[in-house]
Image (cartoon, rainbow, N blue to C red; front, side, top):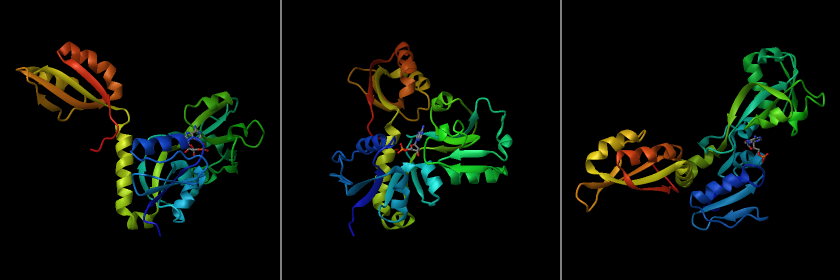
Amino acid sequence: MTDRLRLAVPNKGRLLSPSIGLLRDAGYSFEDRERALVAQVRNAPVDILFVRTGDVGEFVADGVADVGITGSDLLAEADLALPEVRRLGYGRCRLTVAVPEESHDRSVGDLAGRRIATAHPRVVRRWFAAEGIPVEVVALSGAVEVAPKLGLADAIADLVSSGSTLIVNGLRPLVEILDAEATLVASAASLLNRAEAIASLDLMLGAAVAARGRRYLMMNAPEDLLPVIESLIPGLESPSVIRLSHAGMIAIHVVVDADSIADLLPRLRAAGASGMLVLPIEQLVA
Ligand code: AMP
């Protein structure tokens, strides 16, 4: 048995490119996939197995891979009870129940006795059973959104991110039954036997996820302005303060949300900060 950690990731589809991007941001160096099934990471004992998004869970459950990255909706549907190691913050979507615009159904309760088309039959059956609403689930593997037009179903339960596909297909959302995103999972056995290797992978993926949307902000200011500057920066705990060679001047270094920069810089400038630099952060370990 190899002592390299085997990580299964999607080989195509919408989770492929962001998963590769995350692994690279986390510092892992490997050849582009081309047609290979396995890529060896050059700078860490990890082998990447490229498999279908919907098969990642099975590969992990069967022990072919130790860990995997796939959509949490697919994991819920496969019902494999794999331990989630970390949610990865991309591929976000909601499994949404929707009806044709012209339908008289206004709430989920109105769906009693209706046919619901979905590629997530188990999740949908479970949800409606828990709500005590009897429905007939029509399992489809794709093109769920056209099922009502084809007369296959009265409603659908499909993955939605922006909601534009629903609108284009003349569908009206009734309720969201599951929030999903790309997720790192492991098998219970690997969590036990490969604990250290999985912890390292998790640390590096977590560091790359945490760095996204954050910036490193450096500025100079007169020392006596420190309390004012601290009060302007939301959620600031303990900034690094470095004394400069100019008497009474300090440099202040902080990590801030990227979204706050546009509002923050003019206010810091007005308060007396100068020499402001905003830098990207590649990895952040708390
Ligand atoms: P794929 O079929 O390989 O393109 O991947 C589908 C997976 O991408 C789903 O199972 C979800 O986890 C994720 N996903 C994220 N947003 C959406 C969306 N708007 N529609 C379908 N899948 C999405």
